[in-house]
Amino acid sequence: MRFVPAIIIATALLLVPVIWVGLDHLISAEDYGGGGAGIDSGARIELERMRQQLDSLNTRIDGLERELARVGNDAAMAPQPGAEDQGFRQSGPNDIVDAYAQLVFIADRRNVNRGMTVLNTRYLVDKLGRPRADLTDQCQSITNERLAGQLVVEEVGPIRVRMLKPAVESLRTVFEKIRRTDPDLYAKINTSGSLCTRLVRGSSTSISNHSYGMALDLNIDGHLDSLADGKTQLGLTILADFFRTEGWIWGAGFGREDSMHFEVSREKLDEWLEAGLL
Image 1: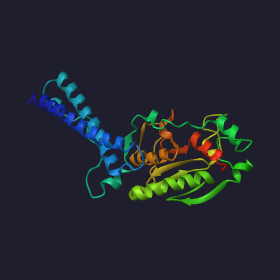
Image 2 (image 1 turned 90 degrees about the vertical axis):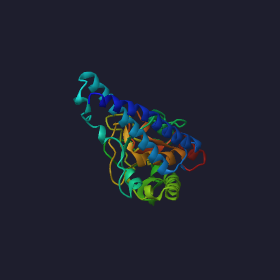
Image 3 (image 1 turned 135 degrees about the horizontal axis):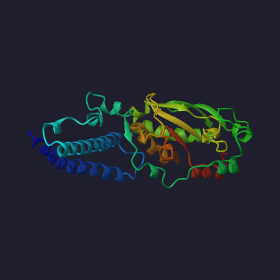
Image 4 (image 1 turned 120 degrees about the vertical axis):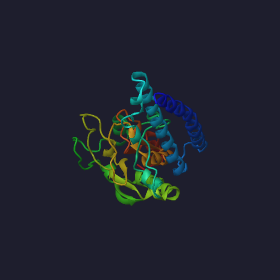
């Protein structure tokens, strides 16, 4: 019996290349699409599923090796805590639909906004002015006449928002692409808020981009994503492709990860200013 752990480890090691081959195939398929919004959601879910399976397999191997070295007997066959909890639910007819709200690690999150620039307070104030003279960490109304005159409250795709008109029109484009490409995901999109004129929580000088009506928080099926845990809902990773194509920043790439958050990039704002939309 003492040789069983070694056999399990050997078998697991043989399976790792198999999973990597499948993973590489899916990554290649994703790259073929240029990382664009048209990536098939089923393929992305399968990609994330294989990543989770690979992580789970590596966890199992590490645990078994430690046990084998420590005791070299039947104790090595004990299951490792948490190993079976990793990965995706894979039973029932609605696997893909249910998978949208499941948590996954954010791959290469520091580069998810590559090619775009995050708007900072100095640039926003320079281009648009302050949203109001006095700001606190609580939501207040916009008093900046230029901005207030552009605010609209509208149903945009599956949600209702209060934002600047150019941002709403841009969102309409994003959601229509999602509706055509992935109606199951589209039906599960919820908002956790848009306009909120305030300072960044914990700061006395930085103005939240929510203050300008150019940012919103989204969630899948009403389940809020946790802040700064390095994980996100699978559905949000798919949404991020569509938003990136339209020139929106994803909060998953922030120093303090906030993957529910989407906001207009500096490049997008400059495009609107040049076109006279603001």
